[in-house]
Image (tube, rainbow, N blue to C red; front, side, top):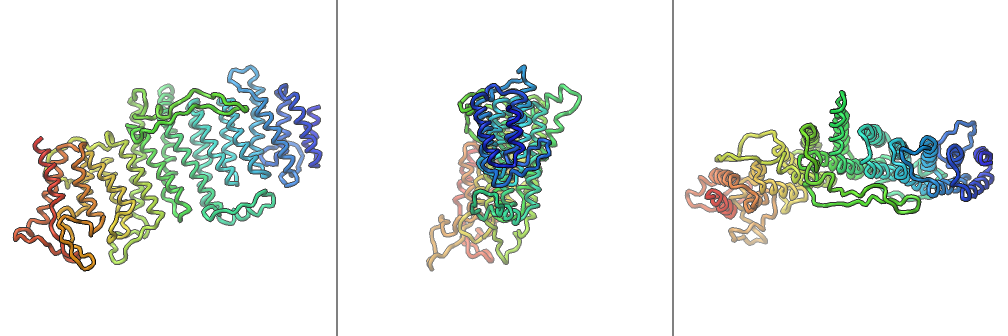
Length: 622
């Protein structure tokens, strides 16, 4: 009788007949749904899939009835109520050693297909979003490898839907499943998840969609008569390309979550598999790492106006995050925040624990791993850090070749657009976090040899490359050299150079000395409202120009207790040498005012010099 009822519902062309049949099916489920299993349950679920109105399910019949029209919307809603009843009330958690595993797996596979059918249905967006959440619930109920692989593949399919709401919900759900159940993944599952599902499954398709779509696609979609609601779209989301960019941003953020939690586990698993087999399985992880860096770099350098800002910021965050998680200290060195997850989910209408509670900080807090680091793991980690940091060096090259940028053009001041300013501000903030992670290991200043001048030859260490990147960022951010105040980018770079100088970084002092020029020893005579300023130690009239702020930073870095005595002596000698180069001839006659061609009248100043000498001589005595 149940088969006859389902066959009638599938074959009818009358909506009223389908509605009546679905209501009768609900009565049967409410009374005897607990006894349905195996083939009977599969037949019921396939019937509901046919009535969903989506184009995902195909039962192989010759029935070509189009149920995606508005007339079938009510039937689709009733069918979805039946599906929710089955999932919420009649599905019990399954284990891998269940005796009925083959039969239960076929039923669950049919239910997963049914959820995807409703997810792709165009009748009601709320139904599609709810069906996506049901996929997550099914993964928690049955977290065996076969079911997890199926759920991720179904979410990948929905993540490429032409509706932005469905795509975004699917992407968030997919990464939530990976983050929540990643502890149970094997090495093969991680390889399939990262390569086939995330990188080449959704992110590569999204990148192609951004480059291949235009504004007409969204307008055509909005004119669809089957759309239930008409919503005005903001100009930042009024084209298909912009909406695909938003989805790609969510995917990049999700990938950040995965790397934060499971980078160390991925390293160890790849090494363990390599040690127990003749194949070098870490090769797949290296290729995956390179693909992540390539995609994030492309997003960070994408051209466009304000609609690409979020994508560029997400790309920068991912590049710097890769450097942070692969450094020796780990990402935990940059933050003290600890997040605790209870790992409890609402399954079947009740709150229950789905796995042991975990603390996020335990997985990657303070060091690469809580367990001792094996030499093989540390070697692979160092390779990954070098690859990630090289992308930051490539971004420096991109900034140097940025179109419209010409620091030597003094005739027309170069104006940095607001989008680039926000990109550089984000980059500076992320580099500051990276330095906090690496300042004791990869970017440690090391030991010093006393010498007269810190203006030594360039080196290719990570610390030197980071300082060079900051200098390029400052050059790009210098919108107006006559400005009285620092902009956000300049202030962030100066603050970071001060942090590095406080850590005894001679490269940072070298950069600050280069930026300050002669501002440590001379001050411009200012005229305000026709009255000259006679205060020899006041610089307020000149404002917070970059050169003056850099000179102040050199002096303030000496007040740090973290700076070594050797570094203070070297910097003091270098400052004195610079002073002699500037004032060695001018002060022989006792003249205090200095005329600089094209820059007005300057006077000598000694506050910075005396601070440096006081601290430097104390360090010499020690």
